[in-house]
Image (cartoon, rainbow, N blue to C red):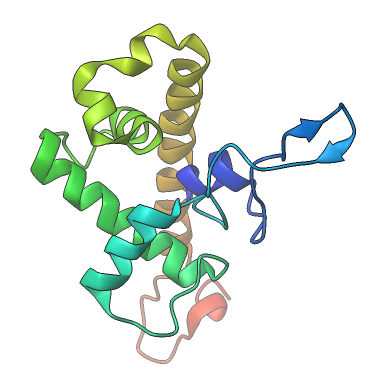
Length: 150
């Protein structure tokens, strides 16, 4: 979720801003990134080939989160980044696995800063999830969800 917050601010149909021709005519976009995960066309096609869901759309949260998980698993195998390291996973996500291996992010302080923010946000979301799970754990068989604490 921290990746999605950073990539799209939870906007399902967002794209990179279009370049302007003559300063005011919308022209082409710098990349094919689209949707919650800002997945680009080539890697999205790889994801579809691996997962074969005909309903998968970059604008659906279910598939965007699955895509990020798929990409991070692939990154772990290819680049050997621990799945518990969201900062470096984000760097590889943003720069691509080859770009990460080359260290292309090292010349981009704004990307490093964003990756650190993603890492901190991931920790926050993780602690919130743990607290939420604890709040909804029932002690007795007759208690249900939000009624546990009554």
